[in-house]
Length: 481
Ligand code: GLU
Image (cartoon, rainbow, N blue to C red; front, side, top):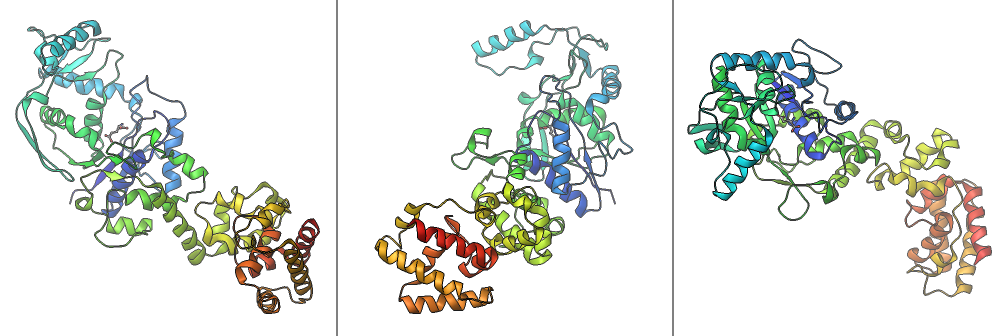
């Protein structure tokens, strides 16, 4: 049986958006599912769009997501080099083969002339095709500094796309495309055909934007006598509203930003894999291994998949709980390093673990820790208005509030064993003795010890803070009222 070989072929042109990464996940899954090979190839032939450092970012992101490549930069392999800019001689050799067989030619037409042709087509209301302007006598010679074009063979073409189904196109979309540019670099259109062939790629998986160029690619495969690999067009990722492609302005951050915000790699992988694919069940949370075993090309949807950040963050919350519950508090804690408020640095790990264990199930991202836990590490600023304006406390008079704080302090001071159970007993007694509702009494205490919009269960928060600190904070508030 043929070994499955897939590739991710990003261009190092800047930040990594959500769509780029999904184009890496699917080929990875298909390769792993079939015990095949997943190649990383850097398509850096567009020197104008090249961004320094972008390759590092790509590699780092793939590693973070656990999408290890079997061949490519760093790891090497038998089909290198894996940077297209280092393969120029290969493209030249291949284009020379086409020239020799009369299927490619040097085209010295200056850009101004091309512009003229284009304008002429606009005036004549027809699509621009270079072949309509091709000189009668062609120059079948490889020349440095002169673009090389393909001599097309326009005819009806049919092919199968694993996602889009049966496709066909007429001659009107096939042209004498540029293969080698003036600067000696190949175009994407040419280079990927050569590389996929040399690297033994069996499944070409990429964004649907390449579908319209496929007839030209088919002509190239034909001219080289190559088998056409399985072609897989991945649907667009749509903006949260409307019918347009997700763009930078639609609120989606780059993968790096999500990572810095404390989105876990597992959640990112899970979310993106399911953006445009589902296995037909209700399951939403998948580990990487589950994705590898369940993924299938025929369940990739052909229509655009809508990007939904709320869902991504929900999934992240699910993954945070899952890691805590299945791998333990320490495993989750290890992932939170760098996300705590600065003041937490001087506290022992044991204390942070305790805080994490009572707060983790409210986290959507790890960076929530900063705001949600600060009061565990430093006395909050007293804000009397927060108490007075609280929706449960508004109805109480100042004297009543003062009295309740006194009673709470008295009650909590009398506890010898400062643990969650004893605290709960004491809090229940306090409810009975004062005749107040839990919402009133507990809000009062909660605000005084945290001045945060929310906190975990009161007895757990009190237990974690410790008796001295909890009482000191309550006393300070009682005095300030
Ligand atoms: N370099 C192309 C891009 O970044 C890759 C397309 C492909 O996978 O063939 O869009």
